[in-house]
Image (cartoon, rainbow, N blue to C red; front, side, top):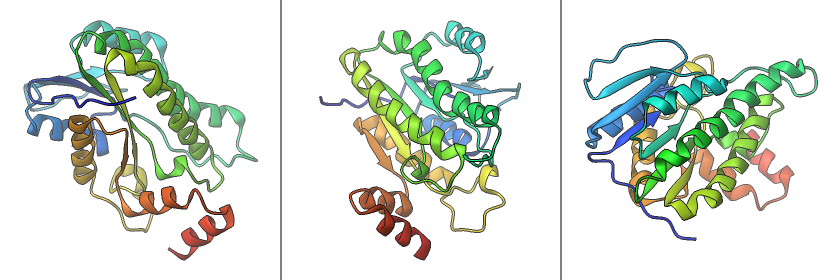
Amino acid sequence: MSSTGTQINGATALVTGGNRGLGKAVVQELLDRGAAKVYATSRSAFTHSDPRVVTLTLDVTSDASVAAAAQVATDVSILVNNAGIHSSTPVLTAPLDEIQGELDANLFGVLRVTRAFAPILAEHETSSIVNVLSVLSWISFGTGYEVSKAAAWSATNGLRLALADQGTTVTGLHVGYMDTDMTAGIDAPKADPREIARQAADAILTGGYEVLADDISHQVKAGLSADVTVLYGQLAAA
């Protein structure tokens, strides 16, 4: 299976969770690279100053909301599945419905949006999906977030196979801490969302299957072939 890049200049894209954080940075990066239109979505209404941005209210946990967005954004050749939630849900003690909520947003949200837009993407000779994952797709500290991101990584790999024949490249973007609202309470080195957005755009252009966007993602991915005790020991020392 080989991949082909998708042009950004002149293209139309949709970015879920495009009103803040990494999603906002991705919207701007696509505009800077010449995108003709970007649908930026959020669960609540918002505005954007650039006339090339069309804001949409979209709840990725709702079948009806996703279907409504697909009826509006019928010209998309680039899809960025960025929307997600992060809750402190210990896998052993948290109410299961809270963990299910994370799975509904971070896993099933990706599947809902991708299923709805796959026929639209297929109308283009080449098209691209970027799924925003995490270094926590590969290592867990005991919460439902890691469960949801590990599942989303597997889904990303499955979607890549399923959509290859229609010319859609599926990219998994892995990153550790970013300087966004989600990590505001964490005291650790954080990547600039604008740099992560730049790498995501590069992958769209080149047809890359995977982006390891920061040092910790490279470190953890490389450590997957090691004994699990070694991997957790390296992280503890970092």
